[in-house]
Image 1 (cartoon, rainbow, N blue to C red):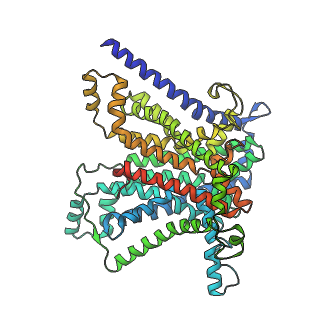
Image 2 (image 1 turned 120 degrees about the horizontal axis):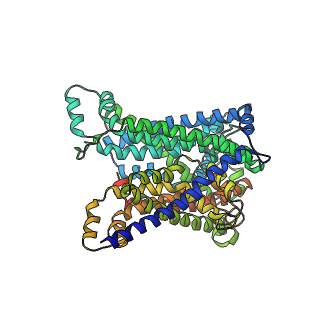
Length: 559
C-alpha cells in the first residue's frame, strides 16, 4: 500500500513540475522580462520610460481611448447579450433552435474577417452605403463607418456571444415557482427581473464583463482597419514594435496588463460578493408565446440581430465569387468567377497560409490539452495551496491581451534559453502555436474544470478500491467522463487560434504566415476576392467545429 502511495505521490510531483516548467517558462518569466525591458535603458534600471510615457499627451489619449472602449464594450455587449438570452429563455417561437445557432455563430467567425466584411458592407464604398446614397440621391454616403462607433459596432457584434451564452446557461437555474409566486402577489416583469432573475444571472453577467472588457481593450483588428485615427493601446504597441522601440512597447504592455488585471480583480470581488446559490432542481421556466406589442417588439429585436449576424456571412460568400475588378468598380459586383477558390487550392503559395493555420491551431490544441487537463485535475483534486497557485498561473492569460503575450514572447525568446531549449524561437514556426496555446489556455482549463466538477469523486475511489492505479483510473474512468468537456474546449481553442490576428501580427514570420495575415495583406494588395475566399474557407472550417461542439457538449451549448 505504501509503495502505491509513494508511486502516486511521485507521479503527482512529476506532473506538478512539468506544469510549472511550462507556466513559469512561458507565462510568468516572459511577463517579468517585459517588465524588466520597460525599466532598462542603456544597461541601467530607471523609471524614465514610464515618466516619458505618462507625460506624453498622445500616449494619454490612447490610454483614455482604451479605457473608454473597454467600458463601452461591456455596456453594449451586456445589453445585447442579456436581452437575447432573456428572449430565448422566456419566449417560445418558430425556428428557435436555428436562431440560437445563428446567435452563437459570431463565435466561429474570426474578428479580422468580420472587420473586413463589415467595411465592405458599411464602409465608404460599401454595398449598403452606396445603395442608400443612390436610393436617396445623396451627395455623400450616409454612414461614416470609421472611428469609435464603427469599432464598437464590430465589438458588440462579435463579443455579445459571451454574455448571451453564459447568461442563457445561468437562466436555466431560474425557478418558475418563484416567478409564479411573485406574479400572484402582483409583481410586474421589471420587479421579477430585479428580484428573482438578476440575482441568479449576476455571477454569469460579471464573468462575461471580464471577457468583454479584456476583448475591448485588446481589440486590434477593428481599431487598426477601421479606427480612422482612433488610437488605442493595442495599435500603439504594434506600432512601437514595428519601429523596434521595444522599451516603449514594453511600457505600453505593462500599462495594458495593469489595467486589465485591475478591472478583472474588481469584477471578481463583486462576483464573489454577490454569488448566488442556485436551486439544485429548479422548476423549469414556462415559455410564453410571442403576442401583442411586446411580442412584436421581441420579434423585431431578434430579426435585426439575425440580419446583422447573417448579412456579413452572405456578403462574404457572395464577394468571394466575384473578381477584384468587379468588387472595386461596381456597387453590386456581377463578374462571377471560381478563380479565387481555384487559386487557394491549387497555388502552393496561396494554400500555404491555410495549411499553416490548421497546423498551428492543432498544435495549440495539443499544447493546451497537455497543460490544462492535468492542471484542472490537480486544481479539482489537489492540495489547497498548490490548487490556488496552479489556478492563478493557468488563468493569468485570461487578463493578458494578445499584444501583451506577443511582446512578452519577443522579449523572452529572441535568444536561446532553457525554456526555448537553447534556440531562439522568434522567426521560427513554433512561436505562434505556443502563443496561441498560452492565449487560449483558460478556455481549455475552464471546460475541463467544469467537466471534472460534474464527476462524482466516488467513481475514482471505487476504481482504486478495485486495484486500479492512478494512471489506469485516469485513462479508464476520469478521461472518458470528461471527454465532452475536453473536446468542447479543444474546439474553442482551435477556432480562436484559426482566426487570431493580434498575436499573429506581432509574431509571424516567413515560415508560419497564418490565414489571418493573408486575409489582411491580400485586401491591402487589392486581391479582394481572394481575401474573401480565404475568409469563407476559414468560416466553413469553424462552422464545422461549431456543430461538433453542439454534438458533444449539448448541455452547455444547446437551447
